[in-house]
Length: 428
Ligand code: PMP
Picture 1 (cartoon, rainbow, N blue to C red):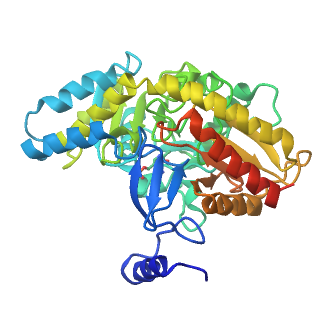
Picture 2: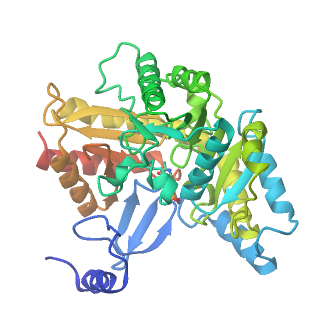
Picture 3: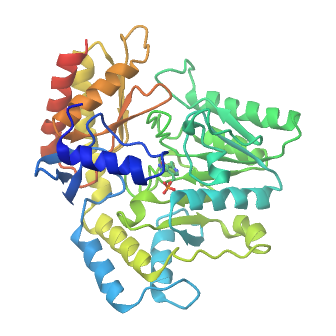
């Protein structure tokens, strides 16, 4: 099968000792041993360009995070039922990045836990149960969140109270006003819930629709949809696990591109640069209906070490100007990728916000028929050229380009060159 002995040994062992639900990337899995900034190294010492990771969001092994975590580990790490300054100082700073109406913070360890709590909050506040999500979205691993995660496929049943809307895909949806169209789709599903005796609780969405194929859409188009959500007594939960923490360049939070105020914000991945920390930010009046009735305790959530990591991440984003960096370098990368779109018939669409870009592969520009096989083959060939990324979208034909924010203008040539080479060999 062409696998190196080292890789074969690890894949064999995995299949003996790990649960069988796990999926590795690549026909020839990568065995990584080290990371720095936007680069990774495998066991053979080969260097890779990471174009996929928003977990090591400010860069792999960032010294500020290592130092903050190490220092705190030498002092104290415990559960969260004692007084500690770090959780309070961090909350003040994090809330200052959100709209003024959002004035409360809670902490967990994963995005799934944040979304799970958000759904419970939506239900307590609205008195309803119905949750609307987009067709290919992913929101987590728990029973509640997997029940609103169609991306998990047909083996995972959705909750009876879940309704799906088509994603706001400007490339594929033929509507003169994308915002009005999307708002209409949401209203239709709220009406369908009502027809089935389900009261609407909320709309849960990642504002860059990452699993739906990376769909930043025009700035502001979400506003009409959120108005419909509120008019029908539901809340808007902005799942910022993907677009948050300066990723989109134009704003610190993804939803802020749309000039909307969520009722609840959930976050995870990029928050601690790899240290498990996630959060839920909310309007206090929305949270009250839940908090008045039900206690919440999360053993590790917001512990002193998690807060030290999160604090360091926030500081680095500000001090290194990473939001502006993401905007500027993201725009340059998008421009270079758009040249490939003009060069190849099989590149249907290139879109993005900051360092979060979707590169859509099709049979031909006129038919827009998704080319999943080509996307898979290109991903494999990129891997051979030591560029790591993966695919997204309902047809699996969109390359998801989302490097650590440490990605530099000087890395563009490596990525675009490898992509050009792959398309020349495999595409049309
Ligand atoms: N929401 C979104 C949009 C995600 O992409 C993910 C993870 N891929 C989650 C929630 C779940 O986060 P976690 O894996 O930390 O539970």
